[in-house]
Image (cartoon, rainbow, N blue to C red; front, side, top):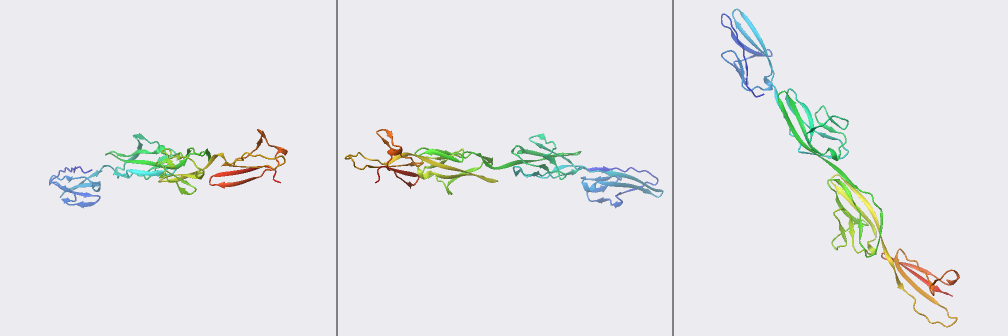
Length: 329
């Protein structure tokens, strides 16, 4: 295409014939759109274009008659690939169509390559009649650089595009309940994957946690570090992993264990024979501590437990248990 073409027409006769040209039955003048007829009778086309293709007839006439010569002109054009999008984004498991529009004469054939290797047609990938590359269910392994190659007898051309496969976040399963002791540190797990890499946030009982006071720290792994545990740190924590194509959540219930601490202890008593004895003991902790009694290092059981009562009260994050031993009457 765009090259000069000369269609010759040599004729003889007596008297000398005159030469004229026609295309597809339409008479051509001595000069026209991109062509001219030379003094020697040749049809000269300065730059051959697809519109110049067709059947040409050279006619030589004199008073004795007319002779015709037919010439078929085929104009070939090297392929041209329309600019492809630089990046195509898709979500995992969804269908993807990579476009490829190419022109040329004759009509070019289309092949696709990924990272320089031909892509075989199969169930998961195929070249559609519209020349797009269809990927039935995109996966992260399909991501990469793709080439659309157009070829015909006049040459070849190619277009390049990059496929990015995005994956919604997924949080790995873990224990839904964690227990640890008061005063220690706790790591609440949240290992998430996705593409692009998901952003991790945490909230406690529906309220976002803040690291301003140094209590909470979100680790690079996504874990939540809770420092210097107190009773008020118990509750339900929610990890949220989010990226451009989705969101995932996982809940962890944190229980704070507090060692038993006596809040009330009986003191030494001096009694007269026959006096009544009433001793009071109270403790707090989480879970609620059980209170037992011994007399002279021997557990009080059965009939020895003449009178024992108990009450419970709940402080924030802690429990208290009271026990009395003696004869309540």
